Image (cartoon, rainbow, N blue to C red; front, side, top):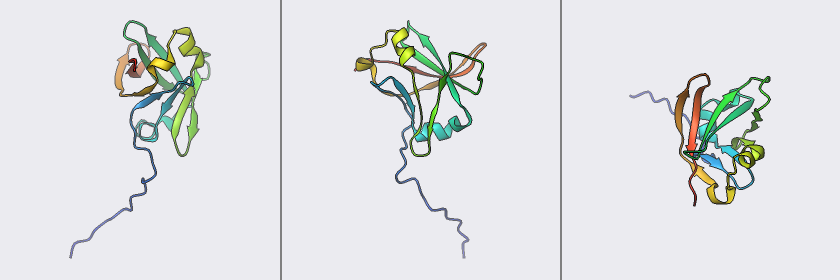
Length: 124
């Protein structure tokens, strides 16, 4: 007789989205799957970087309270996490009406910064 080691699946109501979300209300969302897979719960803040030539956002996660340009991560047990980045979008003239949506990301190593999660914004 075979000995099975079954574990009950309990992710039925969990969002399994892995793409980073940019919303019309100036937030950047980290859905539950992305949040859990990348250990975002371990961090308090996000740092944002802008590449105007490629319309790309780089996101780095940190616990450094000394950096005054950090954005606080709003953590949720149900929905992952998010940051409100109104000043970032306004400073870089990003039209959220045109670029809001879900984005696939890539990890990029940046000298002097570390790992960035990069999304390239596209217009609808």
